[in-house]
Amino acid sequence: MASQMSLPYQLPPIDLISPQANGSAITTQVYASMRNALKAWIVVKVAQGNAATVAITPVQATSSSGTGSKAIGGADTTVPIWLNDDTSLATGSDGLVAQTAALNFTTDATTKNKIVVFEIAPEAALDIVNGFNHIGLNIGASNAANIVTATLHIYGSYEGATPPTSYV
Image 1: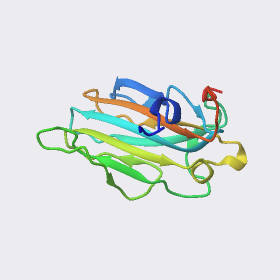
Image 2: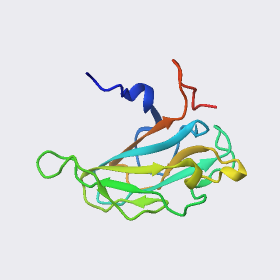
Image 3: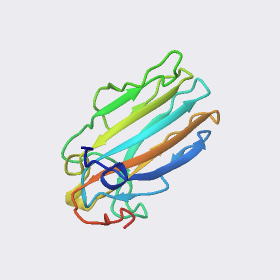
Image 4: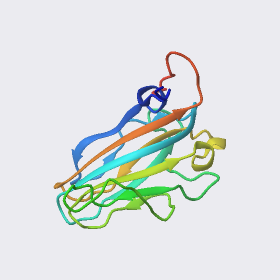
């Protein structure tokens, strides 16, 4: 019997940053609501075509328009981060390696394709008490040869045929 797990239903992908060159700073395109979230993962892919580091910072806001945007950091001062520093078949792997927990991450300067994953527990990583219940992502300026994209996956605390939208 197949498992009852369904990625589109239980961990729907939300496009935070569409693929784009990283010649200048990139601000999240969406601030997603975490009101119905038990946990979320921000998955950042970097096609590093230039030996310039890429700074990645999850941010929180009080609304889907980004009101009061600031770096994450609520009850906890760090979040778990995982890295695959080389996704190529020839020299890399498909594994993720735990990094030192932090509130942001900067890649190294090697020209490889990379995946960085931030694990967000809303009650710990967001300033919920002061109304910060939306999450997004900012990427620091790097080099136009570095292409960045980011997807948010929310594990929700809801049941029903149609999950609530995170665009509220």
